[in-house]
Length: 144
Length: 195
Image (tube, rainbow over all chains, first blue to last red; front, top):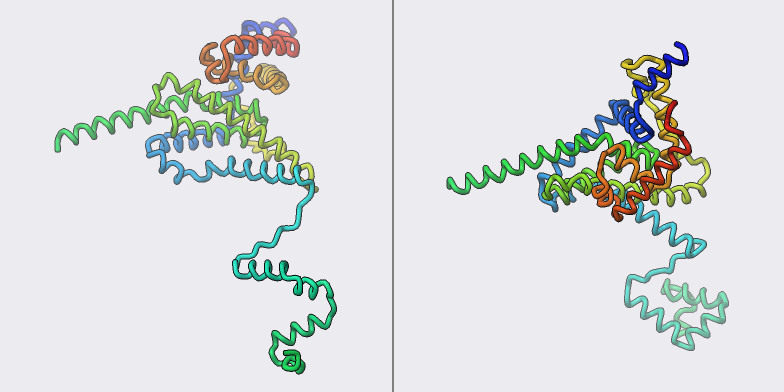
């Protein structure tokens, strides 16, 4: 094929200016969309039509996977924002479930004697505490 | 009761007609919507997800609206979905950039059978069209988002200026500006597309 024939074929194939040619090219590209993609689009359409004929509330129950992309995006955004704001992960603050225990801790902190005892930090205190909890230590009776 | 039965029949007929109309509408836009989503997202599965989400949202929220409103509404939903996915991808990209041994996001498993050319066109004409498509796809992906939207909605989907403005959530004047600039940019890159 010489250049003239090629030009003639192109002109026949893609007439007009940029707008017309680009439209023809885009429409041609639609016809080349593969069968797998067409099949998935068909399935999506059927699902959408089915969803339209059901009550709105049921639609949320039927398609929870529709929420997953948005939920995932939100979770990632929160994680990234938290990481960027804090700079580094922090140690988790211990949570006390039992309110009685939390008040015990409060008593311990506000009691001067208890604080002095803790600040002494010698091993004999721990030995004594262990003996108290066992209830069978030799020196337990003598100390009281 | 006959009256109730008649009313039910009428309701069923109306619902069926609406379902049929919705199915026809979605069938008429699905390929173009996919093409537009692919131009914005440059990823096959993401584009399919965007179109699927837009279809579902239209069906759930706007199926009861008059059918002539569906097209701009659908493309409005689709454009929002594409933008959401672009943002999510940006965040994901930042997170993934920290991780070693990551898989390239743009990698796709290509089905060679699906990619095989159909035999309708002569080889030379097919080659020319392939080149033109490739050039146009490349130029479109380089366009700013709003220009690409305006160009594809007007040129591929054939929406008028008012419908495009509704779909893009902007004024008609903005649509004209975006479209004009898109044409200018494409002309600079492609000439008159005489490949």
